[in-house]
Picture 1 (cartoon, rainbow, N blue to C red):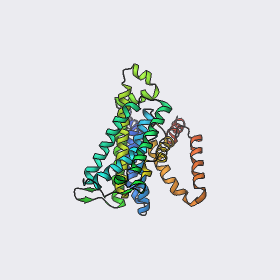
Picture 2 (cartoon, rainbow, N blue to C red):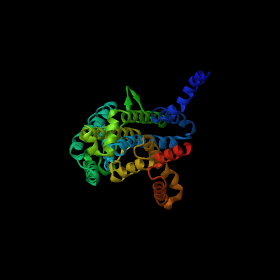
Picture 3 (spheres, rainbow, N blue to C red):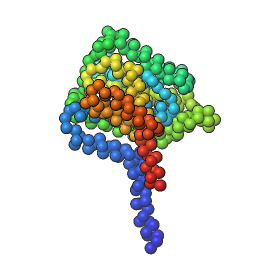
Length: 329
C-alpha cells in the first residue's frame, strides 16, 4: 500500500519542479502570453507597442548572454542593431537584392564584423572594455551619419517591405506574430546555450576568468563566441525593426540607445533570461504610460529606475525569485 502511494505521488511531486524550470515551464508561459496577448490588444497602436517590446526583448536576451553570463560589458550594442537594419536596407535599395536575401546577408556581415573587432577588443577588461565598445558604437554612428549617399545621412533612409516567396509582410498583426516567434526562438536558444557546457564555461568566466582558465576553459574563444552571437541577435532584431517601420535613422546606432538596452538588462536582472524580457517590456511600455505626465515624464521615469535599483538590487526577476523562494521555504 505504501509503495503504491509513493508511486502515485511521484508524478505529482515531479510536476511542480517541471513547471518551475525556466527552460520548460517558463518558456511555455511566455509562449502562452504571446499567444493570448492579441485578445487584449485593442488596436494597431497596442500591436505596435507589443512588436517593439518583442524586438527590444530579443536584443536584450542576446545582450544578457554577454553581460549577465559572460560578464563582458558592451556600450555599443546599438551599433550592431543599426547595422542589421541599414545593411538590409542598403543591399535591397542600392544593390537590388530581394529583402529575404538582404536581411540574412546583413546579419551575417554584422556577425563577421563583430568577429573581427571582438578578437582584439575582448582582451580588455572592466572599464577599458566598456570604453572600447563605446568607441565602436560611436564610430558606427558617425559612419552611418556621414555616408549620406548610402544611408541618407542624418535624415535616414526608407526601407523596402519584407517579401517572402512573393508574399509581402505587412500589417501590425502579421508583424506581431513574426516578432513573437523570433523572441521565443531567441529565448529557447539562450536557455539551450546556458544549460550546455559552453554556458557553464561562460558562468565560470563571469565568476573568475583566472579560475576558469585553470580548468582548461579557453576564455578568449568563449567570450568571442558569445560576443558574435549577441551581435547577430541584435542585427536580426534591427533588420526586422527596419523592415517593419519602413524607415531607419542614425538614432538607432546612438550611444543613448545602447545605454537604454543595457538599462533594460540591468533593470530586469542580469544572468536571467526572463529578466531581460521583463526589463525590455517594462522600460518599453513605461514611457508610453508616462506621456500623460508631460513635463514630469522623465523625472518620474528616473525615480522609477532609482527605486527599482534600491529595492531590487539584483534586478526585478532575480529579486522576486529569491523572495518567493524564501517565502516558500
